[in-house]
Amino acid sequence: MSQPILLLNCGSSSIKYQLLDPSQPGPQAVGIVQRIGQDMSTIDHEVGGSEYHEDIRFADHTEAVAAVVKMFVEHGPDLDSVVAVGHRTVHGGSTFVESVRIDDAVIAKLEELSDLAPLHNPPAIAGIRAAQEVLPDVPHVAIFDTAFFSTLPAEAYTYAIDAELAEQYGIRKYGFHGTSHSYVSKKAAEFLERPLTELKTIVCHLGNGASISAVDGGVAIDTSMGLTPLQGLVMGTRSGDVDPGLPKYLNVAARMSVSEVDTMLNKKSGMAGMCGYSDMRDIKTQIEEGNEQAQLALDVYVHRLVGYIGSYIAILGGVDALVFTAGVGENADHVRGPVIRRLEALGFELDESANLVRSKEPRDISTPGSKVRVLVIPTNEELAMAEETLEVIGAEF
Image 1: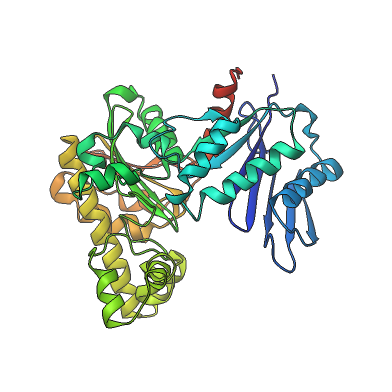
Image 2 (image 1 turned 90 degrees about the vertical axis):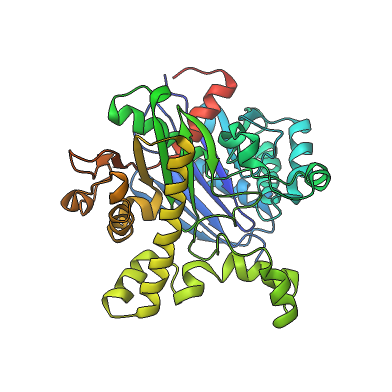
C-alpha cells in the first residue's frame, strides 16, 4: 500500500523537502528552496530524472511552502495521496522524548524551547505553520533530533554548574543528530545479524556537523553534542570543545562581544578556522600539496575523535562495533584510516583495502582478526523520519 510522506527540513532561509514512501526505493521527488526573505529566492525540484528551477522572491516560509506545493501540482508527483507531513525539528528539550503529532499545544511548547535553539527551532516553527496552512487536511508530525538522547543517564547529561540555575533554564546535555544515530545503530545490528539489544555500539556521525554516540543495546547512554550543537568534536566550521573561559578571555583581550565570539565559534572555527577549508575533500587535496596547516587541522580532528571513542569504550565497558556514517564518515578514508590505526592497542584492525572502497552499501572495513567490527553504514535520516511519521499517525507499511 502506497503511503507517501512529505518531509520538510526548514532552515532560517531555506527549505529542503522530499516526497518519500518507506515501502518504495528512494524518494519520489526532492527539492530545495533557498534565500527565503532575500531579494531573489530560488526553488529547485527534481522528479523522475527531470529538474525544474525557478527564480522568484519568497517573502517568508508560507510563500515558500506554497511554491513547493505548486511545483508538485505542475510537475508531479500528485500530493493528493500524501498521508502526512513530517517536520525535522532540531530541539525538543526534555519535553519531547519521541516524535509527536503537531497541535497548537506542541507549537506553543516549541516556541518556549526556542531559546535553547534560536538558530533552528524558529524556522522549523515557521515551516510547520506554513505547511499547515497550505496542507490543512493531513496530519503533521514533529521528529526531534534530540529525542534519541532522552535516555541519557543523569551523570551523562548533567553539567557541573549551579544546580538551581541548570534547573531553571534547562541547562543540560541534549544531543543532536539523534535520528541518524538511531537509524545507523539499528542498521549495524542488522548488518552483523545480531540482536540490537546485545550490541555495544559507537556511532560516528561525521559531516560538516559531527557528533559521536555511545549506544548500549539500542539505548543511547552518551553523546558529544550538548546543550547546543557546538559542543564535542571538531567540525567543518564549529570548534567543538574549547576552554569555557575562552569567551571571557576574547572579550577582554580582543574586545569581542558575546555575539562575535559565538559567531566565531560556530561559523569561523573548526577545520575552516584552523586551515581555511571546511570540506574534507579540499583538505585532503591541500595535504597532498604539502599544506602543513591542513595536516595539523586533520591531526586535531582525529585526535579529538579518538579521544571520544576511547572514553566511550570505557563508559560502555567494551564495544562490539564502531560505525562511521554521514558525508565524511562514509567517504573520507583519509579520516577513518588514522582513527583506526590509533586504536590498534584496543584491538582494532583496519583492512586497508576495504577502507578505500567507495560504496552506498553497508560494509565492514576491519580485518577478520579485529576484536571490534569497524563498519561504514550510509545514513538515511529521511527514511527514518518517514518511518517515524507513519508510526505516530498509526499507519502500517
